[in-house]
Image 1: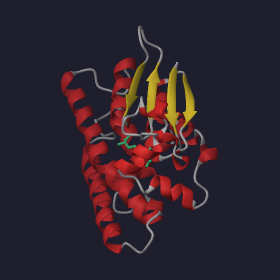
Image 2: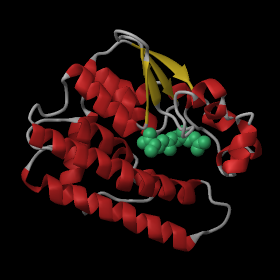
Image 3: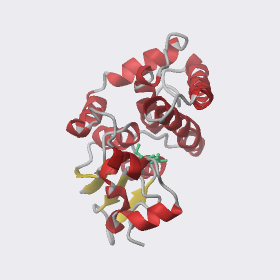
Length: 235
Ligand SMILES: N[C@@H](CCC(=O)N[C@@H](CS)C(=O)NCC(=O)O)C(=O)O
């Protein structure tokens, strides 16, 4: 059994989709990030950057294995199952390149864009333009990559697609049209049609945000420094 520390956001969906695609048995443990549950000492012991998603793999010989950071989790699960990753060294190298691309480029840029589009206190025009352009640039990178292949690594759907798809799914609410990215648009639709992907995105949907964050949630989510994290996690 795998313990899956989860809250329904694009970063959480990546791992929900991977677990569903692999058919691995897992138990969902909600981490209500608006309520500050990511700072609980027991969660920090698994995820030292106090961010979800994280997993603990109990289906191992010896001590349970904790894994944090979505890219590392997807790679770990791909290695464990032999699924959604090429078998050869050069193919694995490419899988790692695109995993790192997502967690170092598309993910943070989309995350900051989402922050300024959805939660910034004022107009923040410069920030929206800056992250909007970076998000657009990342879509351009994907569009070029998909020029002569149906999936990011070639003919086969892989961890590279699973990790990059959730932040493309929500392009429209981020204020970005996909009209200029026809291949990305077709890729997005073909992945959306997979039953495991639907199950992953639906996981915990009752917890999805339906109203703007309250003052208390804003304080937890948008006021973090080393000092506040120390206070929230109890030292
Ligand atoms: N690089 C991390 C990002 C994870 C992340 O940013 N998670 C957010 C939710 S989408 C979180 O836990 N936020 C809690 C907080 O901001 O305190 C990954 O890819 O796993």
